[in-house]
Every structure is written in C-alpha cells, then in structure tokens.
Length: 195
Image: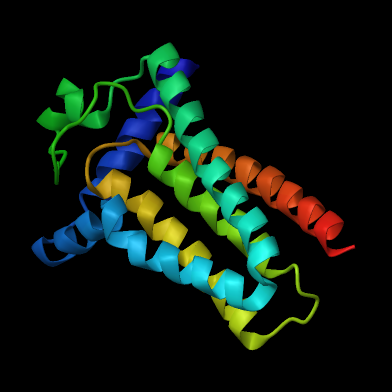
C-alpha cells in the first residue's frame, strides 16, 4: 500500500513539475525564496499594529513567530525520522525528467517546511486580524490574498523539484494545525489583555 501511494505521489509530482516553462521557472523560484517575502511579513506586522494596537499586535507577532518555529522544527524532526528522499535525489524522478530549479538541499523532504510555514502564517495572521469584530472588505481581501500566497509558495516546491505533492499536502495540514492553535492562543491572550 505504501509503495503504491509513493509511486502515485511520484507520478503526480512529475506531472505537475512537467507543467513548467522558462517564464514560470523564475516565478516559482521567487515564491520559494523565503527572504523575498520579508517585506510582506513586515507589512502584515505594520497593519496588525495599526489595526490592533501595539499590545495585541505584540501577542500576535509572538504567535506568528512561534507558529513558524513550530512548523519548521516539526518538519526537521520528521524529515530526519522518516528519511524520505527528496525528488531531486531520486534516480527514477531524475530519469523521468524531473526539472530541478535550485540547489538540491538536504537529502530528506518529508514534509515541506515551506508549505507548513506559509499556511501556518496565513491562518494565524488571519485569526489575528479577525480580533476586531468588524469585517471589512480589506479583511476579506487579505484572507483571499494570504491563502493564495500560501498555496503558490507550497506549489513552488513541487515545481522546484524539492518536494513531492504529498510532502506539500502534509506540510499544509501541519501548518494549518499550528496556525490555528497559535492563532487561538493569541486571541485568548488578547482577550485577557483587553479586559
């Protein structure tokens, strides 16, 4: 059963990876680059302070940092425990035309820390913005934007040849779990500070 699932994961990942073009390669590399998104993170923090005030924004910022740390460390722990090779180290994947966009990195890739971090950040930050009861068009727009961004960051890892789709899906679930838990914690802390 596990072998059949792995083969299916390889086939689907090869198909997605094969949808590339020279034009989109640059875009996928941009989405994969963690440092490129620092200005967006700073902008999110700026709007949190503006919307919530510094005390609540501080609780949210700490929750966001903790979300990223827990997503990252969960991924590192499982990568080394499970020991599933990245697609860019698989002879079958390379023989069948896997396109690798960047350096191969560490040997193991289950699960994607990029996907976990992106979806964890998205859900935790959205919960923080929803601390204010008024639902504005900007808030709804932010929800659509941040989850589209998380989806593209996650998908970029398959296009980069660094992760299987299964790695990305598990990373997404882990990120959503940590983002929900830490967002909930931030909301509780803000409720205590607000009273």
